[in-house]
Length: 170
Image (cartoon, rainbow, N blue to C red; front, side):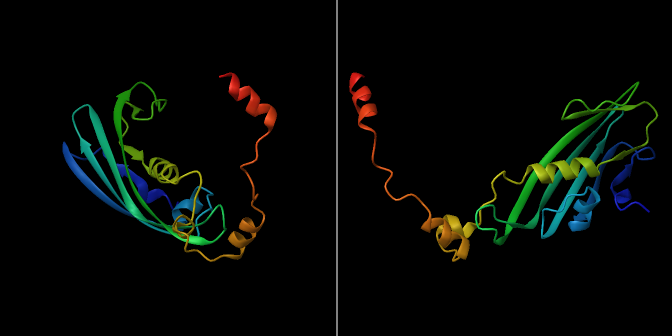
């Protein structure tokens, strides 16, 4: 059985209305996508599906904790995740997901796999540069940080006099 099969929502037999689904996301979810950057993850995702006559609105709400390594010091830390995302599902002759917010499913479809949308929402909520909160506060005591400070340039105030003369022209 596919580990992502629980993220397939069968909407074909549902009446018009709002339906809620809860999912617990952990490292197994990300490993199914061959993404192994997290040390630990525990994320709760609520999916609200609103079925109407000719379209479906799906809203995703995620919150939780991801343990990840800092890009500066390589120290692990917990990062809080809180993200929202919504998509609209319409029906057409063929499948099309060119737009980020609108998906076209073929007429007669009765299910949708939402695992890719949850994955993308969570991965895109992580900043490009992951910095340990202790670095920002100045409280992290790490061997790597001490070495970085040791090799940091000391006197950056010196300027080239030729450039100073050019600035006088302004």
